[in-house]
Every structure is written in structure tokens, then in C-alpha cells.
Image (tube, rainbow, N blue to C red; front, side):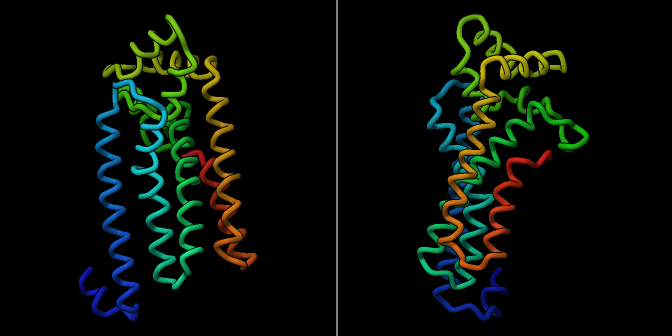
Length: 212
């Protein structure tokens, strides 16, 4: 990293801003990972789960890389602000899609066990919303299964049914679409180039339609 810093043609102000953003992203991601561990197998409120998702996923996967590139590309403050807002929104949408794939995805396509989130008791936005929308014995049933270390396919199918019947899957599908729609509002503030606008729009659509 020091070699890149010395040999690059970027200005000192660009370098400082770039490394400051990288460091802040690392700190935020670490905090988000800590919250993820803390909230596993524990009830908390929706805003806490959203904050954790923003820190762990949105800022690391989208906001950080997009803004670092913008800084090095000499974007102005309004463009960087718009990129940050777009990145945060599509990052949340990306994670909701990831939550869906973590329960309903096909292992051969996703490339990992769909029992992972279930066994770890991940307190995702999808699962939190399911808990909110369930009541009585069905909520108790989900609490018994979610986080079960030896959960199998039968448990997974039951969780899938609870998510669908609660209305949480419908909520998730609508929420990710709303997030992407909101994100696209910022595209024209980022660039006037039609091709680049199309690329940003395609990226936003991709994060909620991907199957792995």
C-alpha cells in the first residue's frame, strides 16, 4: 500500500481523502460485524438490524468502494454524496436479496449451504420481519428452529413456510424494490453520461435479481 501511495500520480489531498475513507470503512465494517455476532440468537429492534446491515454490508460492499473510486476520479462533493446515498440503498437491497437466498436459494447455485443462516441464528432483516409479523405459537416455533445447531432440511422447509405465511417474504420483495427505486433517483446527480447512468441502473437492478 505504501508503494502505491508513493508511486501514484494522485494529489496529496486525494490520497489523504482516499485513505481516510478506507480506514473509516474498515472501522464501520468491524463494528457491523460485532453487532452481527451480538444480535445472533437475540431479539432486538428493526432499526438495530438495519444499522448493522448498513455497516456490515452496504458500506463495505458499495459505499466504500464507490466513494474511494469517486475521490480518485476527482468527483465533486455532490457527486460523492449522491454515490454514498445510492450505495447505502442498493447495499441494503443487496443484503435483503442475500437474506432471501440464504433461506430460499438453491445450494448448487448459491455456492454455500442454505442451512448456514438457520443454524447460526442470523438475525437478518427478513427473519426479524418474520418474527414481527408472527404471533403466538408460530413465533415460538420460529424461535425454537432458528438458531438450532443441527437443523436439517425439514426445519428449513418449516421456516420457509413460516416466512411465506407471515407475509415477510412479500415484504422483503417489495422492500428491496423500493430501495432500488429510491437509489436510482441519485443516478442523475452522479453523472450526465447516458451510458454510465445505464450502468448504475443495471447494477441496482442486478443486486435484487441475482440468484447467487
